[in-house]
Amino acid sequence: MIDESLWQELEVHQQVPGRSVRRLHPDSPHDIRVSVTHPGLRRMLLLGADAKAADIVRQEIRDLPPTRGLHLSMSAVSSWQYEIQVMLTDDELGEVFTPLVADIADVVREAPTNETAMEAAVRRYVRWQQLLRSVTREGLSRQSRHGLFGELHFLLAYGLPAVGQHVAVESWTGPRKTEQDFQLPGAAVEVKTSATRAPSLIQIASERQLDVNGATPLVLAHFVLDDRRRGLGMTLNALVDEIRAVLTSPSTSLRFEGTLVQAGYLPSQRDLYDDDRYTIRRTEFWQVGTGFPRIIESDLPAGVGNCTYTIDVSALDNHSVSADALIAFIRGTHG
Image 1 (cartoon, rainbow, N blue to C red):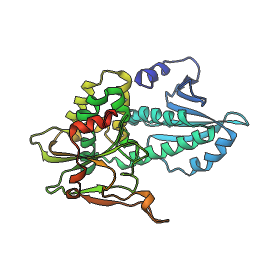
Image 2 (tube, rainbow, N blue to C red):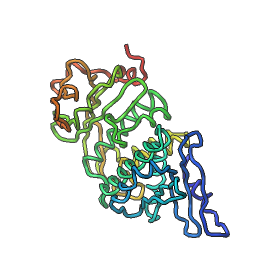
Image 3 (tube, helix red, strand yellow):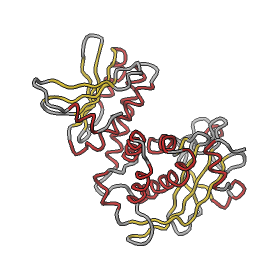
Image 4 (cartoon, rainbow, N blue to C red):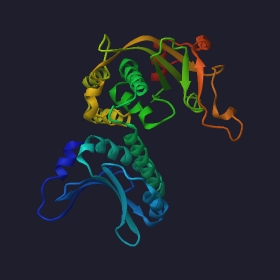
């Protein structure tokens, strides 16, 4: 588990220049370590790469644009062994660096080969670069705030009561750019949140978003918000705090905080979310299946992709499911 206490242990002063190192995921065949340099106290993620894996990602690493506060590099340890280093160069990004390290370490841990592990590490680093560029000084966009509020409301009101804190938080995968926002034991759930006066249309991001994977049920959840500035309702911060209060497991809490950061909710920008207040005005759930109006990848002609489209909710009456049915889907006990 990567947390602030681990970094602080590694930062304990040592007499000679060098670095303190701790191995992560010893059950993994890959060499994954965290490190702190001395005397500079620079925090790093270290990934061991053989010569073949290094050759695959070398040019990609060289071509990466610079990112304020982070640096990705590769150095030779021997003629056949290399080390990829992700370094924190600006302490102001310390709140982002720990979940970044945990996220990259997780994808490397599960990779079948050293080559695929290093490719996955670089791709995930690029995703974090994109996240950091997208979060401005004004914080999340209004649409992103609505979307995050809807996902957190679903987590608190339905995910946590249905399957418990560990499974529910692990299942919240939307900020990691999965096709659906929640990958729960019995079902996948895509959450859509609207704050318009006439929320009759739902925007679908791709031909894969409502594509049922095998026998896994898919539910589309829709929350309609009343968005007011300094009015009645709950702020995004209050909803985050309510979930934090429910989470009693340290590892689950760390996972939740890391996923929040991946969603663009940074602790240093918390004050930006103090004024806007949201009230859930309407809640709707639909099971996606036979006859559901959608575009899926298998129906597209060759060469067509990256489709975005809208669904009129008036066409979904025959697919409506209750909250009780939703819970049964989540638990895998439906039907």
